[in-house]
Image (cartoon, rainbow, N blue to C red; front, side, top):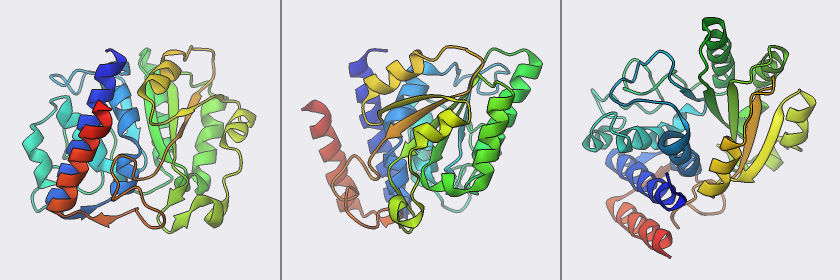
Length: 273
């Protein structure tokens, strides 16, 4: 896919994400908006998937460890026709197939149920290890938030993946510098994520997380060299529209129809600039 088409896909996914959260009236918009570009690149250009055959055995997998950002993943899956876009308007409502956090038993295209922060990378490492045992050549991608890296279980998984040379595991860190209660630097400073991952034996790439070309190039540059990979995505929480690109709290916000309409128009203007 061309870079222009990837940028258009990212813009559309952002608008669909806002539409879903608007329908619920509130939601985790901050962390959803910061990963739309990465999701667009993964699902529209990089991953081996088939929406018509979502259970294909040797497909690439995605584990969204920060499962509260499910609205962005749901928007991506709808964009790729895993289910009708109209279904996004049922987000987190009674009887929905799109709960607040990702549930593989409810949503077509969700590979792993997530939501308890700090556990997704362990699950992804298990998926990658299992794929190797089965002789598959697929890749497991895992998206984590920078705040959840404060959970020690992540570092056990990081060590496990390096020890077992899981070169079919790619970790994407949404380095948006904020978590639920504030800025990561103030709550528990992450120091250099790249240096820490390198020390654990991972190959590390750092890119602008809102530049689809940079993300695509980073993922295409990955070679199987007996190491797991991490792409540190330098992002802005709430990126994409002015009401969520604010200082302070933007983890979980009310989104009114007027706010959503303005945001979609802003996204269109930015995309066409």
